Amino acid sequence: MRKTKILFVLAASGLMLSACGGTSSSASSLTPSSTSASASSNGGSTSESSSSHSASSSSQAGSSSSSSSSSSSSSSSSSSTPFVGTDVFLTASNVLVYGGEAAAKTGYLTYWAGDGGALTSSSYDGTTITMNFTMGWAWYGVQLFYVAPYATPNNDYAISATLNSSVSGSVTIDGKAVSLTANANYDFSTDFTQGNGATFGMQMGVDGTPLGNATVKISNLKIVDNTKTNVYHEVTFKNGDSLVGTVLAKEGEALWTYPADPTPAEGYVFDGWFYGDSEFKPGSDVVNGDFTVTAKFIQCATYSVKLYNGSELLDTLTVAEGKTVSIPDDLDYGFAHKANGWYKDSEFTNAWDFDADTITAETSLYVRTAVYPDETYENSEDLGWKIADQYMAMQDDGSFLYSGEAPFGGSESWHRQINFDNVPVGVAGTNYALTFEYKMNYAADTKIWDNVANADNGTTTSLAVAASWTKITINFAGGAFNANNKLSFELGAQSGDDTVAFALRDVAVAAA
Image (tube, rainbow, N blue to C red; front, side, top):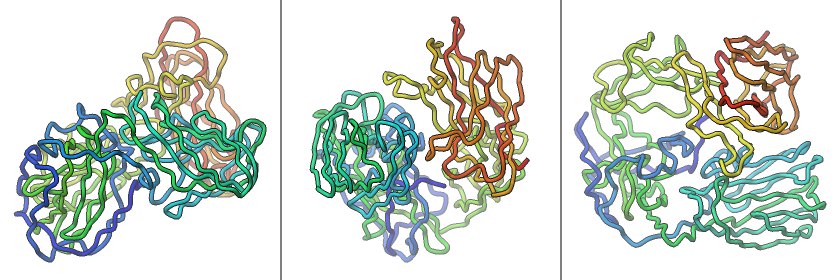
């Protein structure tokens, strides 16, 4: 499912009109703190869009100015606005997202349950996060991690919140111990410096006083960027005269999150966010001042664009004549697979150019997929608790390759991990088989891991050194898989001077 960062409500309003297929000018000449001009008409949004851009996408999440478009959304700086995160760190559909610190994503509150423990429920009412969890045998009950938008090592932050627990116990906040009395509010604030991992972490239940079987509430949670050299600006989104939402952006960077495309009235298509006559591209244009952008719609011919994965129809888009195509970020390419390029033909001989190719007729596009992990882990704080992207790649044959990183010694079988989330949920009474092919230059283990029970969901299977593609089949009894499962390849210590070489392809879970 597409992960929604902020839910913006769109009201029926006026719109801006343009000729079909018209070309927008660069946003480089925009002036901060101005009001966007618009022509009134009746083709504006009449319903709320059901999806939004995901801030976890590489093209949309707090990209640095070096990777952003060269056009700037403002020609000069306006007065700065300090970043104060309140509800922006929560998703509209998921209050807490499962994962360790290495899996923490910008703008999400990520949790990790203690060994043998579990987060049994969570909710958010706009001001308070409520968590219910049980304790296991670990020294903590639940750990929470958060990565602030535009988090940069050595930046200075402050966090404040009110805690309330149904039982007495201890928590640590960025490594500082706090004692809680049952059913009593505890207000705290602390300053800290951004490291290579999460912006801050919190452990619920520590120092021999676990918050076992507790209900813990966190309210009024705020995070403030106190780095003196950082400047933030407000980008206000409007649909006609109706306010869609306001997003803070760090000066010189693209927006880390932004509204869903508004749904146009029948006979119109959404043409983008505009500042006067200039288009503002929220995920790529950098921000250097406060300004307001307005939704623009056009009335013209449209064509269907069908998106295929082999013979499977993934989605059908409606695109205005003469416009480029944007691929939705919520497409399902199959378990353990990601998109590795789009093509005009199913044989993958003619690539689609998303910057230059436009739609002039009914069109079909075909995706080439490859195995690629949802998350990784490396037992190193200096490396941000994850394997660096430079060592991982999708191959044209559909395989995943992890190579080039130096080996490590010791006896840890889990020092590095390649993990795949969203294992298909099983049907009771149906037996399943996990199959894959691999090559690697040292031994490892593979398992289906239950994120809540913190246990193997089946038998751990050892993988031997394999110079050529080797197929593995692991059988599971009926009903074994659930929504909390992930597939984990645990890469242990490696001797010798050779760098790591681990390749994986044809990963699948199917009824046996």
